[in-house]
Image (cartoon, rainbow, N blue to C red; front, side, top):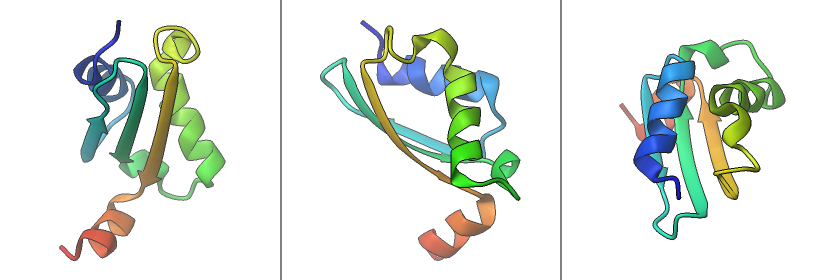
Length: 82
């Protein structure tokens, strides 16, 4: 069973992240917020493809369900009020 810490590590290893938070404690359903400069200038679909690429074969295998929100650093600053 994969953990939220492992998911976080896989995303961080495959994608430059300014911020990442993964939650979920049932071992099957997870949620994540991923902030990356690599998302700048990309559509939401392209951003999600980058996260899926970072996770590789784990999606649909070890990871049963993952919902996530992707943001550029600027979007994150605006959203967080920083």
